[in-house]
Amino acid sequence: MTRVAFLGTPSVAVPVLERLASLQPIHAVFCNPDRPQGRGRHLEAPPIKHSAQTLGLQVHQPESWKLPETREAWTALDIDLAIVVAYGHILPRWMLDGCPLGVWNLHFSLLPRWRGASPVNHAILAGDSETGVSLMRITPGLDAGPVLAATHCPIQETDTTEGLLNRLALDAAELLAEWLPALIAGSAQPKPQEDALATFAPKLDRGMARIDFSQPALEVHRQVRALQPWPGVECGAGESLLKIATVGALRPDPEPPGTLAWDRGGAWLTLGDGHALEVLRLQRPGKPVQLALQALQPWGIQGRRLLATE
Image (cartoon, rainbow, N blue to C red):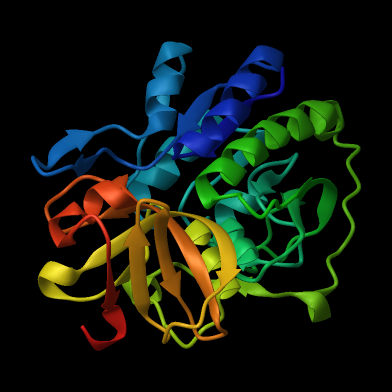
């Protein structure tokens, strides 16, 4: 019997694990260690651990693949085939070479576009019309291995990273189901990527959250949709700090860039190209995310504020 392992951590990996478990015995699941979460900093298990335990699967949570005990644990499992989805670790060469049928990653982009840690975020930021899932054999390079197959998914103007990831997770589960027999048989023949076409999706950071009011409204629209829930998008400062959680339509607007105007008809933020962005949901300091007009009530039921100066 082929000995299969699954490596993944966040919720987007769960559909693939569940689909794999319905098709093939899984001998081990690897995910990140439990981490402190929330204001209470209580230890919380990653979603994949919860799913694996529900399925009755053995779970391993190594802190690092550089530790000798991690290598010992992996070697003892005698794994033939490994499936990876958003695991969050760089896997060592000895591990890649030790799987006779390969280590295969379901990467959420159309490789070679958006190699790296945050492909869906960067696809939305760049205004891509589509993305997808690539089934790739992992090699030592960053998402540079040969690709066996891919699915395509259009990016709508209302898509957020979270919503798009949820759709891609389901696509990834079906893509693996389609190609699992070939992976187990050792008959898969992936094709090399065109390295000259590669683009990169580095990790997100808090510096990406700040709105540049000189940018076109459409660019900021994409920024909000791409950077939820973290690092989010914000403007203003101090008590005037606003985090923009959800946006809607665009319209021409003569106000200076950085002007937030609101009344019973809605809230609009003017940007640098003479267009305003409809703000649907906001978060103020110390408050939960609220409907924009509700969040702005402390400033009056209607008003105008130049956030570019705050």
